[in-house]
Every structure is written in C-alpha cells, then in structure tokens.
Length: 72
Image: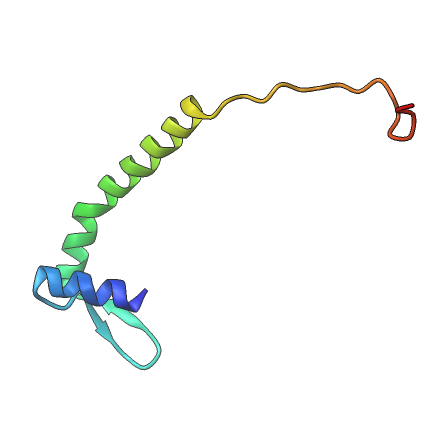
C-alpha cells in the first residue's frame, strides 16, 4: 500500500501524509483530497454492487428427494 500512496503523492506533487515510526498522519492537503475522493469511491462501490446484483445469474435451487446414499 505504501507504494500506491507514494505514486499518488508523486501524481499530486506533494505529501499527503506525515510519516512517523508508528503512524501516518494526513496532511491538510491529504485531508482535502480525501474529502473530494471519498464520495466518489463510495459511489463507485455502490455502482459496482448494483451492477453485480443485476448481472449475476440467480442459480436455481435443486431439491433432491433422495438421501445421499440412495442414488441406485
């Protein structure tokens, strides 16, 4: 994940987090970017779930009247 964050920081041209030995603290610009992107990511997740629900086939339920050992 740190590689992805480094690429994002390179893309925007400034640090998005202040890094310490044990934690990462978002910079003011990191907070601004999060505020802009969070609703977009949420919308994408909702659209993906909706798309999956529409395009995933519903499998029929097959009922077996025989017990597992009585197929002869």
